[in-house]
Length: 463
Image (cartoon, rainbow, N blue to C red; front, side, top):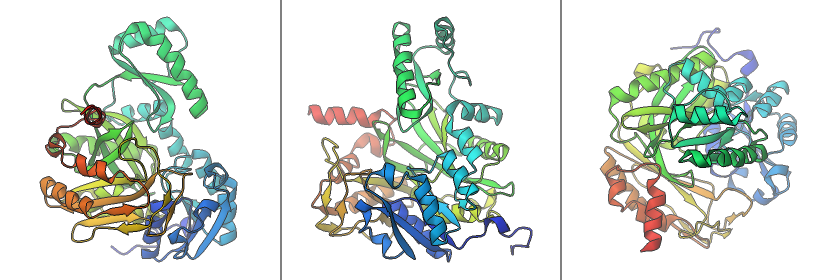
């Protein structure tokens, strides 16, 4: 429906130029979304990324610092100053780097710019796992058994909490993420040692020794629910994803929808996620992450940013999530309601990394040959090309290969063909590993949990 003045982008949200505070494939992806919305872009780079191909297609391309991420992509002052000097009215943080940094979001807004993401307060609430759990419990979102408070210092009280939850338990840093700052405790005699080690890890990695304790689920799947919210009290969820194929807590393959979960089981959880967003005044896109075991969902955290795996939800829902995120930041009313959301077919995403397929050690160097698949139901999100130099300074992700087909079996077959048609020479990649994984019988049947891939790799090494 046509927007009235009341429902149009608020004056404070208006912008026609976006600074993309990121690099690699996500910088290219955001730039494409901006162009399709008629927005100009300012791309930034470190000295190591001066030859990035998306620089030539941006309206401005500016180097903001040395190769070290701490002095470039994490330099908040340099990014905000560059945005103001380049005439950008908004900053898109992508994922990683500063995307979930509440202080940065606040600094962007105080500088008179728009942060393309949730408010600083929402990031702070959901970034702290204890306050996030408390908010989710208040909204009726199912959570992993365990208190919604930080662990005390008193050893006897900690022992009592563990006994009430029941072993095994898991100790987690309140400000943690990315698989860091957590430790499984199988029995009582190692509890206090685990607490001490995790407190020190949390203090060093996240600046806070605050911990919490939950029940450790032994064979769960990792399920995600994607949400989009506007500033006008509207929110929807766009179906679900399975991200159980993980190595060292890092996702390798994602798919949508999660297989073998009945609609009547997932629907109440999705609606509870929407309700949680409305309660905290959430804006933009976000992802609720759950463990799923024995037919029950357990909330673990919310990512207050765009996810690496957003393409599988785009392919099944037909919604351009990056454009929706930008429009929400502009103050537009969400242009769909829950009844409009229909998810069709099945999608897989493979993360193609510059790494040895056996040892998984990073592989830097020049890509001297590149062949990418094409055809119906195949999408490649990447920033590399033949002649591109892969830097040793950053994450090893160089491309995302995404497929979509009417059924899961057809999508798997399409991914096998797409992987067979993907060639990257000059550096090592994990493509041989991905090809082998898509031939695995248990994965083909959807009979996997978050521990499966590690076990599969151990068996391959032993063979």
